[in-house]
Length: 146
Image (cartoon, rainbow, N blue to C red; front, side, top):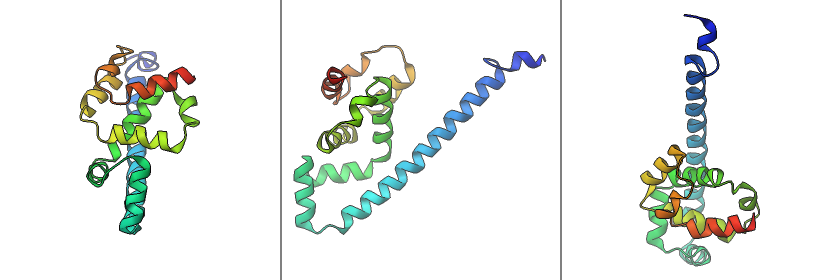
């Protein structure tokens, strides 16, 4: 087989892109797991009143918190991918912590995670997320600030 056919968009190029994608995904999963453990430890160290105060600040109840902890790694990765896909990196950097928590909470309790992941992979329908994403309105506000 001709070596030039293997380079660029050929088999080696596709293989290299696939490997890079897998490595990025694994690195993100490790970072998410570390963040998840750190958050769980921080929450476990709070007494009941402090925990209730934190939950009130972020607009979350104990059941929603339990759901978030149980399913926390994937939502943050999807949220990060959504922000990149929508080109909202710059306005997201300047968000107040309360708004970031709201985005994370909505993403963390979302029931359309598989649909979101498919939409992010697909790359076609620019506004398709509006049909399933509980953060669509927040993303519109961010885009207006852009």
